[in-house]
Length: 199
Image (cartoon, rainbow, N blue to C red; front, top):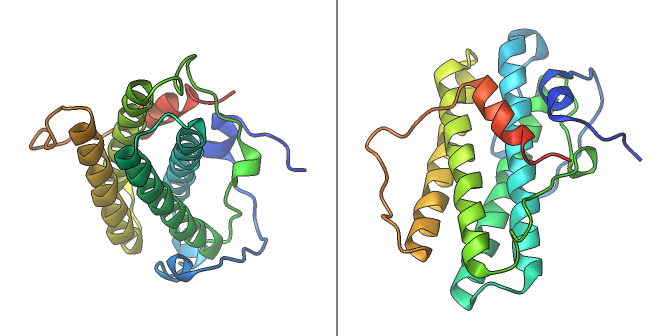
């Protein structure tokens, strides 16, 4: 069994070599980049975004398992879970293409505040916070990555995460359209926000 990683390990580690087998068409969306061509800072961002996707996947899975969601929220959570898994597969392919081994759900334990899964309202509130973290982290990555081949897929995922946030806002009775310029999270702020969910 793999040893558990802290958020700091996730961000800083860079295991060389290793193979990654990905199933499904989502894995073929993003082309690998030669390891020598990827700056360390870009790999750090990819590892952070993988952590965000692992968090979102874990959360949406637990939300569905709670049995507290209405039919409409269940449908939304299933779609978001499928999207998060596709995002992870694409990012994992980029990391593997750069000669690194991406973190998996076996590497990180996530925790949530008490009562997070006690009601639909609590679940949607937590989902909004996690999707806000995702949008901010992806915007920070778009702003800072140097590898041009990473910008389009990161931007595409950011757009999808923003759709998630808008859909959650509709379910909670909030405005479905946010600010004209969504806030970007730098790597340190995104990392700290992610760290709040780790055991």
